[in-house]
Image (cartoon, rainbow, N blue to C red; front, side, top):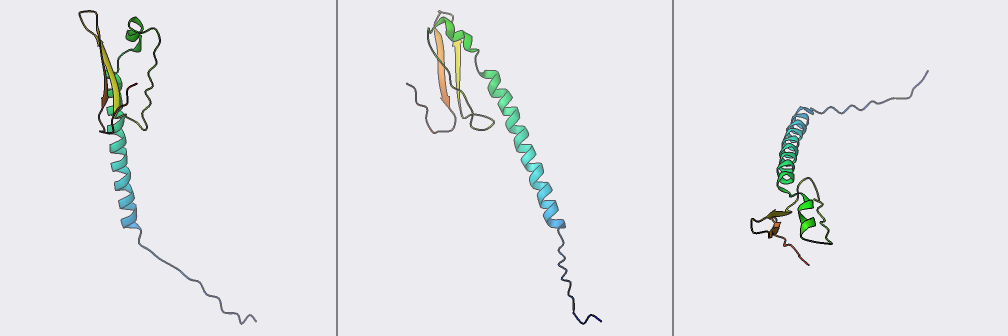
Length: 100
């Protein structure tokens, strides 16, 4: 006969609140990501075609790489009717833009 006493520990938790909170956070995250993706489409739509710069510069490069989905910095250019190029570097984050 086995005289050994065996114990079973049972921990019960109601995880309903945690599951609801997790779902709420996922919905908010998805909403934010959807908004950022839409912002990215808008931002890309205002970026000029870089071939416009070929008529004004022999040698140039543009480095545009957003850290995440959208960038706080962007560039814009347009040919003016007088044959001049309007070019702008913009910083929407307040960190500053360095132009060399």
